[in-house]
Amino acid sequence: MTIRQLTAPHAVLLEEPQDGIAQTSEMIRGERFRILEERDGWLRAENAFDGHVGWLPPGTAHREPADPTHRVRALRADLHPGPTHRAPPVATLSFGSLVTLDGRAENGWVGTDDGLWLFAGWLEPMDAAPATDHIATALRFLETPYVWGGRSSFGIDCSGLVLTAMAAAGTVSHHSSGMQRKDGRLGAWLSEDGRGVEYRRGDIVFFPGHVGLMVDGTNLLHATVFTMSVVIEPLSEVAERAEVNGVRRPNHVIDGIARA
Image (cartoon, rainbow, N blue to C red; front, side):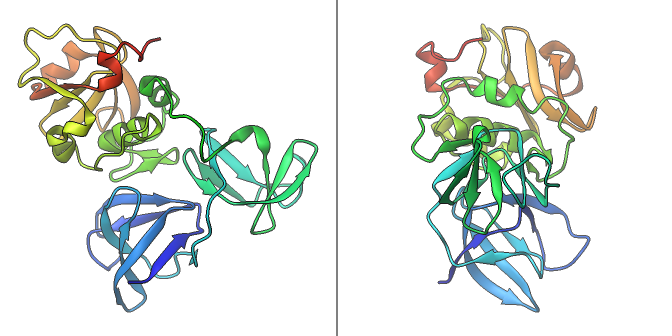
């Protein structure tokens, strides 16, 4: 099967090959995908990052794969035509985007293999150690707009926030709260209903069709349609709108690594 690499800053994955259909996930710059089917310019693609399958719209920019050298660690990073902040940016990349540098460096800026420039401080090498605190990663997305199927700093949903934060900590799961609930890779199962749990920073709390992350013993960080954004709310208030139906504790939280 043909393997390609996304060169657009981000791209939607849709349920069906037609405009106006619900977005199920999102791909971000540098991710590789397998083309499973082509239909009138639409590509049915499997994202190599998390295995999600959906339809890429016609005209989505992609190329033969190139090995990425760096990952965007800033929430957003502008691509510039020259090595200076005075050159108007031509595109913006999200946290987690993958880029290949071409060896050019000037005044704190580095060149990408498509002839553009990024500020070096926005990047980390591909072999950088995983983040030790997935909550610190998730907190960077505060006030990011809620977008169904989103998993970038341009817009994100509840499971996209958990997927992104945990991936930065070294654990890639699914872009689905229901599948995350069943995924033992995300940590030890603590409870079916949250009763009796002494919540810790980093715990993953599930609700019917929803998921969030505990920032401490009482407050939940989540992307929610209630505010159409990423917010922190008391868990008790969220539980008044939807009952808790599961709690997982990531292994690095059990080991005491995740902390403020």
